[in-house]
Amino acid sequence: EPEVTQTPSHQVTQMGQEVILRCVPISNHLYFYWYRQILGQKVEFLVSFYNNEISEKSEIFDDQFSVERPDGSNFTLKIRSTKLEDSAMYFCASSRLGNEKLFFGSGTQLSVL
Amino acid sequence: AQSVAQPEDQVNVAEGNPLTVKCTYSVSGNPYLFWYVQYPNRGLQFLLKYITGDNLVKGSYGFEAEFNKSQTSFHLKKPSALVSDSALYFCAVRGRLTGGGNKLTFGTGTQLKVEL
Image (tube, rainbow over all chains, first blue to last red; front, side, top):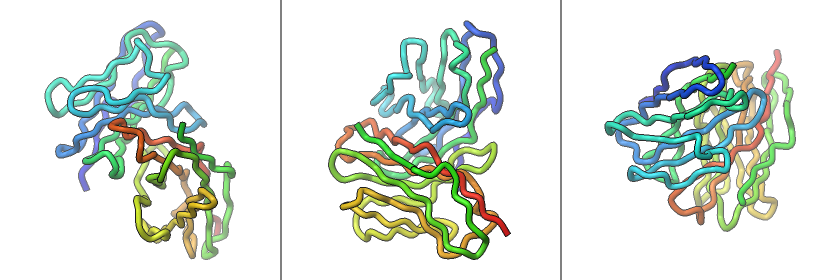
């Protein structure tokens, strides 16, 4: 079965630093998403992306966050100035159509020190 | 706003016994409903979905779920649990009226523990 791949699997950064989390969605999928899961808490929606633009974002996704699909295969999440509370597992997901199941990557564990 | 409630943090069941993991939802209009499973250090894996049609939905690994519109529930079930079913289970909902965003809202998750 095709997979969503995420790199790196673990990222450690200092508070205030910029991080870029990378994802390669499934090739024929049209919708892309970022979710995050703080340890012990529920999976939270961050942003959805369709047709090269953000289609929906949550309150969490403030000006410190941005997404990009730079080359038609990668889908990145950038956090400009990380905060301690950004420490979480970040999941990328994709779907072929809007009402279909999401395929999730294995996640990037971000630790902000 | 759409929301999901999973009232049980943990469900314990003996292998071979039936299991139920509960989920209720709130959404405008008719929902799309999903169950995902998460094994340790892994991403979420799709189990099953309800879009329309038969209220009883069958999914992967012998799991099924029943959509009950009047009770706004979508409980996950399996007739005979296996130790390998032990994992974290998430219910999720998407409304049909959310436009192009397709945001899934997840519940807090239920830890299923199946013991010998």
